[in-house]
Length: 63
Image 1 (spheres, rainbow, N blue to C red):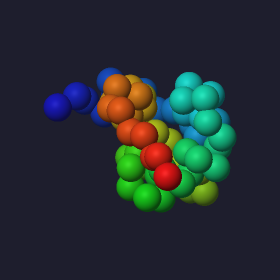
Image 2: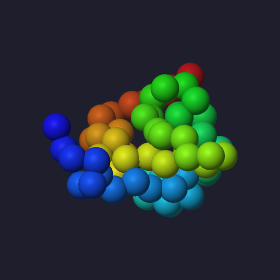
Image 3: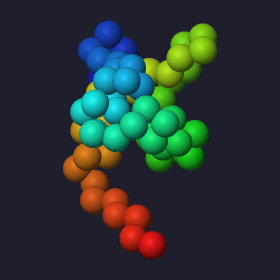
Image 4: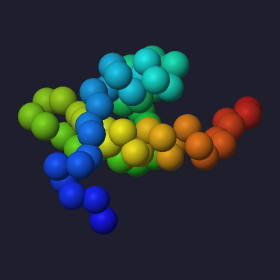
């Protein structure tokens, strides 16, 4: 298990830019439990490794 000092956290805006989605989409993923995040005060931070995992895992929502 990585040490907490080795984990890099990203803001919601940074995650949205990396994933090429809106910030609201990132918030929806966090609130749905599909993207792990830690809440610091009123803001959320997402581990960089969680973003990499989410991008590696194909997830298509075809309606």
